[in-house]
View 1: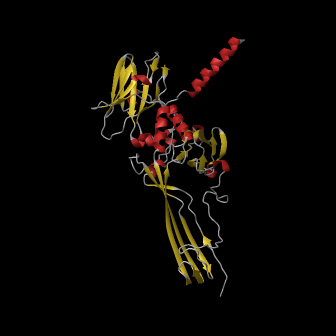
View 2: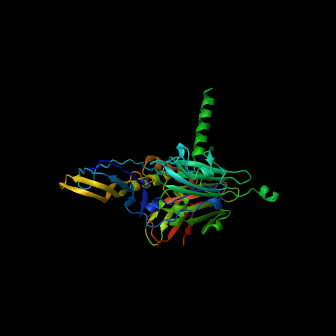
View 3: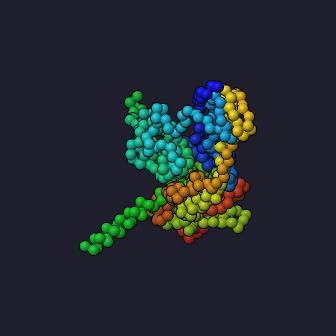
Length: 191
Length: 227
């Protein structure tokens, strides 16, 4: 009897926790705007699905796993439904992708107790500053995870009007910032 | 020497208070730029009742859960100071006996935190397995030998727990909400120039309710009706 055992596993584990139903309201992006921020630069919040937000229960879709495998040779099943599959595979964690263009410094990486800023800005090579400290360029900071807190968020680029905004980050909430830096008046005249 | 010490200390404390004082929002150029406005003895008020989408867009804190939010701008008479105090403001629900004074950022943030902590979290985790096995296998559960082939499995895990990880549940989040509400709130104190900011009234929201803002301005009550 052939005793060889070969297995292959594909296990795309969806670690991201998606909020559905009522939870969509909670995760709706909201931008906190201070007076110094130009209204034209503010992003609109994602539309909430439900106006009434006073539900007591939140439904989450989380930790879903789709597994596929191939087993060759006889197997011992200790249980009727599930066995010890000697899978040799690698789990895929979507939040750790050092080779992707979405890689960001560890300090801005995903965390359960953090809030997210989704950044879209033009030009892409503009510099991002958080509380006055340089954080990187726009193209490298599409998703920023920050500890809960209030931050002075600014984006600067040569020849462009700076974008400045006071942002408030809450655990598990996503803020959208969509900033288009307009050319400074002097630069326009030169053209 | 001791005097200098106290002088420095008092200056430092005053600066700290000034730094921590609410900033409010930028007032519009005139009271008529607000949907509702009124005037009394040269001083003017402009106000706007925020709708639920506007609240969601303006605040990270989920104020739609607890409050009616009003943006109020106070325009003092030229050359005169005007004392702005939240105690002078009341919001009435027209046709009812419901009325409320603006709540502080501390109170509102605590209410929001308590509300979130009382929520339940239901997590659903589906698992689907598809595989292929060649050869045979002994199944001790049934005592039979199975042939190979495609095998499948499916399962769902359901967890119910408290909303500990919800936005606004932790102490850090409460502190952030308090900061946001305080920084955007109407600044109190003597104002020589126009000031504006948000007021948070703990009144249950109702779609068809009409609200009326009353402000004691220079000893007289000014009334602003929101349509």
